[in-house]
Length: 214
Image (cartoon, helix red, strand yellow):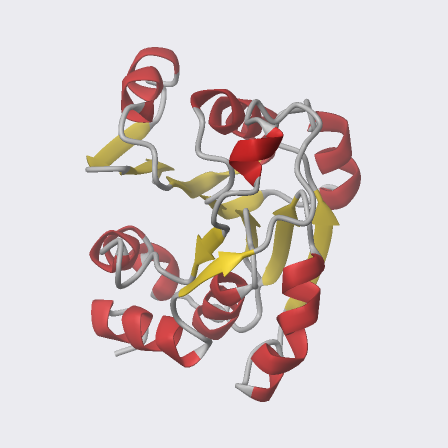
């Protein structure tokens, strides 16, 4: 069934699945890591549904949207690496306007043809923008959205409390009345969400948080 746990896991694998040691070609000038640290290893991606086990939580919190999956939703994913997530959202919501944000778009652009050959982005609309989570981006997002409101957001970016709250604060004015906002790979961010953003409902699962307004 489209949008089920199994469907999400299989779709992630179909579009390339887990990849690691992806080189860091560009980072924010405000990135606190040392040059030596940045040289170690590389980036990982394509692992949210299977390795991290987030598929049950995505499936649960997206059900209200999946029931009307042909609507032209606006979806933002921050931290897109090779674009696997963007391809999943396009397959799940084929008429959606999907906006990918990242400090470095190189890996996604280099992988786009591969994703298209696997069936992605035949419908809907894909937009890619350079985005630094360490900066305030409200004006930039206003120019990007052009009056649109955001139905579904996925923050899989830098994963620090600073960058997560920067992005959340920038996006709050543009969230739809009915929205879901996913935050990945931070084990403590739920504490700040509970304290500072208690106007919204929140569910926490280990290192995964879903904020929503139904």
